[in-house]
Length: 269
Image (cartoon, rainbow, N blue to C red; front, side, top):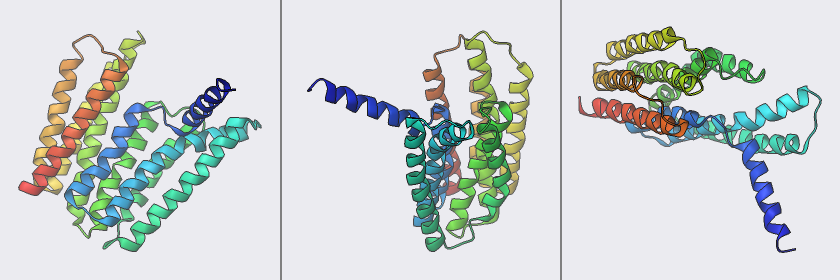
């Protein structure tokens, strides 16, 4: 009896984790960075609600996708019910956070979401067909999430140029990092490489960084941080590929570096 109870508890915990926790480890950092940058530049209660909503929106994708795919295929498993329950709870929390932002905001923060919505919908359409790991949906979803930084600034009645500049500098980090990670994983598993993918990503990142500086010159520090990421990744590509966990940790560190330097540039310059 005493042996069975712990095993059942572990099994239930494992089942909950499998339907509730996203498997995209890099997604945690990519989702956290926009809200963090926005709050460092323009801290507010409404911005905190928006940053929290972004994280909940990221986590709710997993149970919602599992429940949707199971129901579409006519399967009603134990995990289907569990995933649906988790999705309902998280959707409720998401709505509460968005409502809180609407009540507390000093400015119209929703406009960037309208622009980002097609990108997020594009990623979601691939996700429901289990094709979310392709380059286009990965980039679309990540760039769409970067709009949270702009929304947080606007929620504090910040300037449009600053809001868009933050979006562009984070989009630059995404444009260089996602293709790089994909090529590293391909090397790790001896899959065919598309060398042009990373090159186009780096060039696109530099263009986006220049756009950020054009919108707000204080983002020059953040743009230089993006350039440093490009250089570090190019150097890393010449070395043996580390374990995926190490790749993820390095990416989170570089992403955090872009956030910190971008915020410092805005506050100091």
